Length: 432
Image: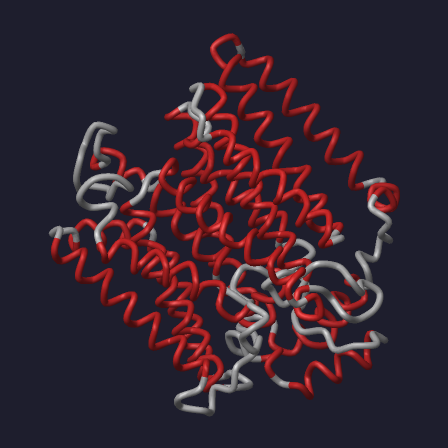
């Protein structure tokens, strides 16, 4: 049964400890205060301190599972989501052919413990509770980012051309800040709609933070964030509208809507230059296409099926320097700026196929979950997956500079796994 945010289970000390460290550590390497690629050769350095904290958080999870007699349920959910375990296993096994064995082991351990903790969160919390968790995370993020920009502008803003002055808040890059800000702006927006429908005064606080999230997003000056914001808000509107008219829709309505959607996608894809022009960007996606072309032709092709080892290639300055020279950039690329391409670099075609199977499973289950529950919170897992898919087209957020987005992909996968539905407590339940 799932842990509630109110009552005995949800406010226990272990619940708070787990959530705090889970959210902190899954963002850890993307923060400006931590080196993006920590030195794994230093035993007591940031890399292994991070793993140590993840282990402590996992031990707290184990304690809660044992205390509440949920080990069997937890393992059953893992059995149902076995491709996830296969992906993690491949990440570890890739150390045998990795460009950097120790780096791969570090990154695989980070992935493992983040996934184990995320699966617990997905098992214990419902979507409406996830909205509340992300509300508080988002509120803290917005306040800290604004405080950093105004308190230490040389730290909180980009300081190199052509984006000098763009906000990056507490994150290493403006694109990272913008993509995370879009996700939490959707949280604020959904909660605002729910509060309005239920005549709840708490909606005023959501409205304030929603406006602040827009300020942060606009100040980050990221086309990636703007496009993602539009896509997700259109998705929220479509879901909100469907919830009100679904009882009137017939099969031909869905055929018509699908046809219009497909026509819209084709129209956008055939006019990408004009679309990017609206955001003052070129069809090369700010130089990304030359980077992608080089990586596919000259790097991925060398180890097409199994990749270069999980998380290894970008940690080598020699690799970043060579890539910079070959694509004609003035600074080193630090990621492939595409989530699937980075997985292809690390784990090859085999890894991409396993990963896509996990993503497809999560998407199908989330869609079914939303249709079954017919509420805006019920569709929130699907919104997270839409965010993850779109955000990773021009940026790498699956498991590259952090594991935050990966964490919530796993959480919604377990949250919407059918085996858990019968075990969910009723809203009146007071404890786990």
